Image (tube, rainbow, N blue to C red):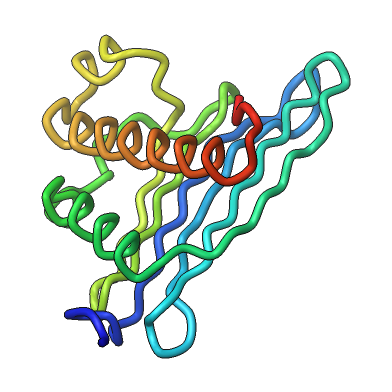
Amino acid sequence: MAMEGSHEPFYVRYYSGHSGRFGHEFLEFDFRVIGDGRSATARYANNSNYRNDSLIRKEMSVSALMIQEIKRIIKDSEITKEDDSKWPQKNKDGRQELEIRMGSEHIQFETAKIGSLVDVTDSADPEGLRVFYYLVQDLKALVFSLISLHFKIKPI
């Protein structure tokens, strides 16, 4: 049985990274619906060159139910109503990107790395940036849970 909205295109990608003393260090993950919408792939990459750590790459299949939950989290956040034009610009400390395609809607955000909620509160658009910050936290927690359940490794 196909789930509601399962045939619509769906894709979400998050990236956070910078180039510094240890080279290009980043965390990236995405979820992409494939085929008839009954399954999707989740990909995760973490490159921390600190102390000669190597690139960690993981890929797994996730169910339509998992995708439905991710869509719910995104819709509930109301991120699609936000605009990143007043958010802190990417800088030497790095950048974050969030890209979402849900049906006919396609949005992309880019901002500087956020160290703490103080950075959010002090920004020119604290309400919008707070929505972004908490959505990213929720998606990261979900990805880290999936990885530790699926691969029995510590994601960070």
